[in-house]
Image 1 (cartoon, chains in turn orange, cyan):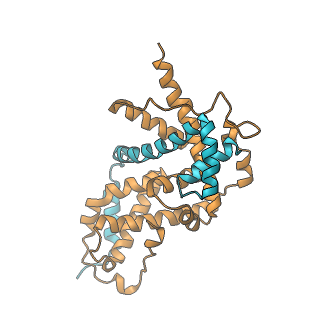
Image 2 (cartoon, helix red, strand yellow):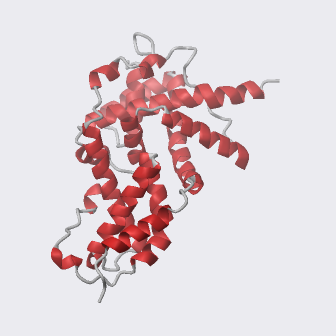
Image 3 (cartoon, chains in turn purple, orange):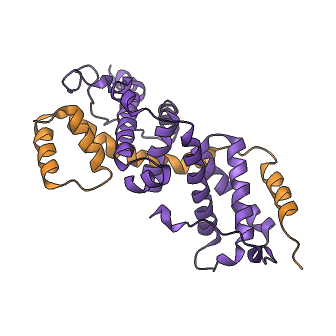
Length: 211
Length: 84
């Protein structure tokens, strides 16, 4: 999947005349799905509502671009994804990451001076994953807490990679970062999440497992 | 011999693209003798699996504020040219 598939929608005069589209029905059917998609990235109800509205607006203006080759949901999600990335990019401009600072950042405390794991924080097996629904729910909320602890930009890039499956280079192009900077952020995100889950969730589990 | 820090960089890279022969070799040798990095490698795969599983559950749990849908509908109706 490539971000380039979702080209900006042209909003010409011609496309604004009569649309056979029933907006009300579209909103009724797809609003919840799109809202949750947006919320994943912005974690703000206000921003989610705004961008979903923009999405439907763009859809009504470009109704005839929808050829029925995809389902309405796929089509709408494509528009929303494009808008989401646009917004993440423009927000990124005033949310700059200092890559020199990252080198000395606390996420790297897992390693000693020569780059080996510290014995007390080194990864240990996670053989105790959640086995029932309630535990799974608690586990997911632990994951969520760890995600919230990441710098916003780092979290968004991690989500674009893991949930959307975008390539490093695509994320880089869209967010105006080099692919190698994207790689640095993904590495940090993974280290941070590993350390966080290990020290919160998995350490607690193995404590309880001991007699 | 690469450091654990470097090994985690390569493990992270391996989640995103195929490694070249030289890097595969360096990583393979490191993993053969480092149980921490082997555990880390498993955890990265687990993390990916969890993220996907979690998305499905979590998305359903997001509470959409009352009236959000109606507000958007109303604003769209104002903005949509009349169909004749």
